[in-house]
Image (cartoon, rainbow, N blue to C red; front, side, top):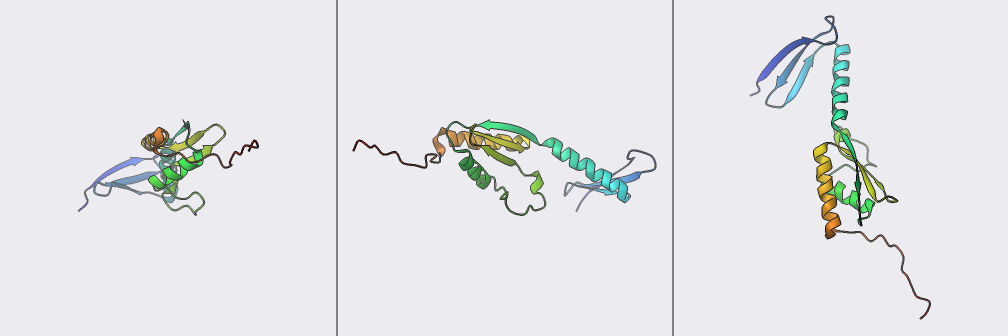
Length: 142
């Protein structure tokens, strides 16, 4: 059984009335409004969602950046960036690598950035380094 609380207010002007209802059981909000007001509400919500995301560069000492991304994506069950995005994927962390500077660039919510940092710390402390040397050295001295 859901409980609802209803709030009536105006958006931007008295000519644009709308009604909000919150379903406490599901945590959803429903807006009853004109299509124009619905678009304004959707744009405001989208703006608030992107405002939650933060950006941070995480330095790596010895772990290959691409190896780190692969493990992080698996551990956090992130979608493959090459796949067609599904609904809700836009809220997922975005991680990119810069192997030249040994950094990960992360755009995510603060708690997700902290999770990623902990995973990186575990990898850096010896939990897993990928071989970065892709060639063998041979001596010509025999």
